[in-house]
Length: 116
Image (cartoon, rainbow, N blue to C red; front, side):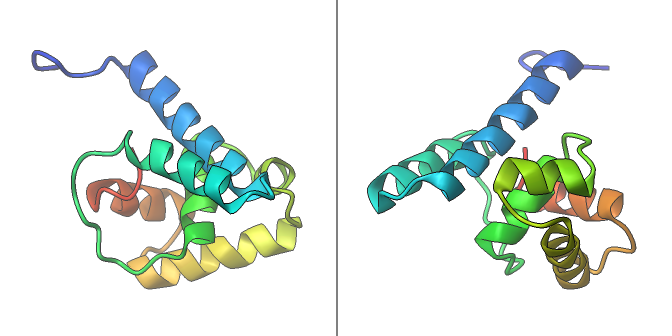
């Protein structure tokens, strides 16, 4: 049941894809100001909360794409990383969150306000 003003499932998935895309664009630019602007735009899509869970920017980048259902190889392609590096970031994020798998890590990051 949705309450007034809540996003539909389709809108929420679009928001999550946009968040991941902005995070991904922030990793590719050479201009630091442009990277910061992309990250700020991505952050503006989040609820106003401080997760305080200590995830690195790269861990959030990888979790953002994992939240859209992409596999490690697809995340690696989107972020110009190797699949093994993606696996390492996911493992580190899971450890920091105390999650047993990537799905639980995504859910915990969402509850903390780190992901939409």
